[in-house]
Image (cartoon, rainbow, N blue to C red; front, side, top):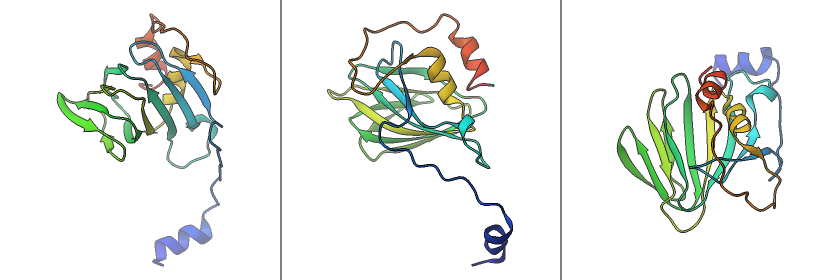
Length: 168
């Protein structure tokens, strides 16, 4: 063990431990054009972490799409769990299949499209966090096992919501 690791392990206070079981996070139905839902597994506002982040899972049904957007001060890691689709990043298309991992640095325009015949699901890591606040503000609370609601519109003030949450 190098000196820095020894100093960290003996002189730094111990960090928090969190165990979240399947279905144990807050979950929100998402509006059109995405539909599907986002589940927040670890919320930045609830963690005493050194580096602020949020972690969750998102499900996009066939035909669903995450609209084109970019995060001016955030980074995102995206790991496909099931299904197939396309990620367009700065105009370049990338096939998605289970096991594919993407990293979006700040100011990288991206959209996700489920062009497959089954649900597309991925795990997301968002730094410095607050993506959970955005999902809560634009979505509707979801309980595991309940049927999906009829597709619904995004709030009219979605740009203001972005500024208060993921672009804050």
